[in-house]
Image (cartoon, rainbow over all chains, first blue to last red; front, side):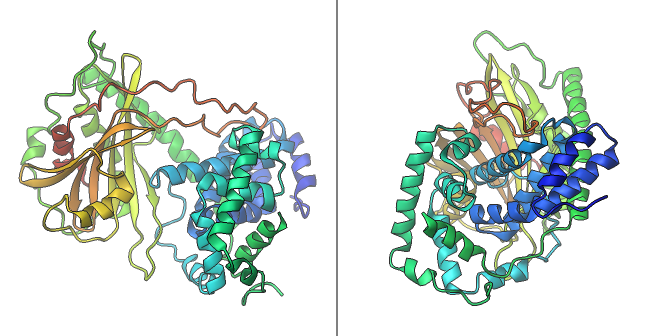
Length: 198
Length: 284
């Protein structure tokens, strides 16, 4: 099996010819898509929820749903949009009913703990995380979709199942929330943080 | 606003845990799919069993709508069982594996006039909750949920076994300290809180309201290391249709067309919900 391209696009397009194949074939497609998109989706999940444990679980829930739908997928060119939608719904539902989530991280697995503790160790990063988590979840989702994922108002509206005008008002309020929460700390946060990329 | 993108980049600009490998992700997806398929079959079996025994399902509603069951108490065998809290909380494997028995007990408690079905096709859904700082056993919650329907209206009967290692509380179960712990999980007791005793077991019965679920009665039995709550909900949360559809399907922002209005009242009384929570057979 060939490796996915850097952005996975070429591989994803090629998958369209394989969708009626055997289980092994569609599982290869699934693995290729996970390799291409898993990390990015998990980062999106982390920005939404602020917790690496939960981000891993939301990512797994998303890919499990993709796996279950894979044989019915007709157009792989909109797979990214579908994956984002599933992730957002998993996040919004999870927060609405915190216990309503299928287990996907094994309870005995401590793999995420040490790193998540380290990541929270720097006050600036903690401040930023706390600030984002204080924004109501749908507004936070709008900010992440619009400014981190660079989606248009219309694309965000489609993902969240609301009107473009709702996205615009939620964006405005979300930005106000962020300014209110961060206040003067905003400039401090723009300095490079220890432990980050060079 | 580029500032927001910069802030997001900063938030991600630190050590990150390794991403689960593709083989691991595939293995989890396979397991979840097998489990879903297996439990769908099992869920169908539960409905058939309930219909055969006449316990709950497929009963024609009465003209005036169903009344809460007179007695959702457990069978005599169950009532004779040890009603004291267990010394050791169950593991999540034990809790998850006990879902079938919980379904049987909840189904037997469904009042006449209601039909019932498993909400998620799973006898139990278990999830790991966020591990508290400082380590300790990972907390989890196991949920079993039935949708109850009568006269074109729907409510929910649900149990949640929550294991977090917290010692069983002493004193008034409706105290502010306990409310602070429980409100985060089951909602504020804005409709009142009382303690009832069933077979020698103290049960905290709290009533809450929210726009999604209507009136909710939550009967909680505290355990060593957690608690068991039985919810009797007037309504069911309105979700959009599940995202498990092909990506080229037309997205519809409308609520699920299968959703039904809430019942006129929760399907069980507080006393009835308390009886279920006190039933030792509800525990693994």
